Image 1 (cartoon, rainbow, N blue to C red):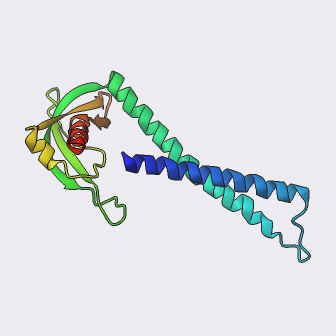
Image 2 (image 1 turned 30 degrees about the horizontal axis):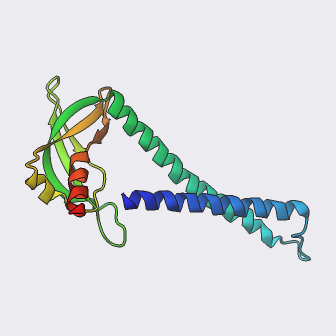
Image 3 (image 1 turned 135 degrees about the horizontal axis):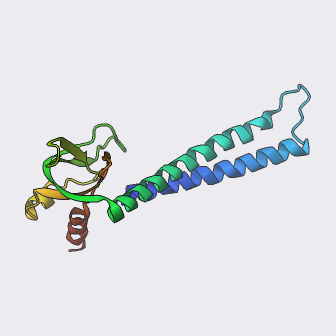
Amino acid sequence: MMAKFADWLVAVIFATVGAIFTIIGFAILASGGANSSNGFNSFIFFPIFGGASFIFGMSIIIVRIIRKCTISELLNSGYYITAQIEEVTRNMQYSVNEMHPFIIICRWENPADGNTYLFKSENIWYNPESILERKNLTSLPVYLNPDNPKKYFISIEDIENEKASYIRL
């Protein structure tokens, strides 16, 4: 949960600082107060770097909003299945401070066509294996788009709730 908040915070800071630098840069350039004797305008870097920071911050925000809308749509109108837990492993493609989060990999065989699908959970910043064992969980709920099974969401709410209650003790 804290990592998601940190992502939003970084995105908002970059977008805000970028917007401020862009506005200041264009204001200085428009006022003509940035003219130099050699013809090079050093204040051009304000809108360039401000614009780049703004675009970076806004792209993070837009991606997060799209992901949240997709998850909401899947939860409301997606096809509900239960997929068998195959393994808990580390996501070696992502790291923060040289630490890799855990992911849960689930398998489901479509009874209609016999195809087998693998689903990966969102990143989990603690090892969920002890919670899975304690709750005797062998499967997790998955919401998927029946037209495109590549669009799915594994609900790890039971695991997160257990972790939250365990911390409060």
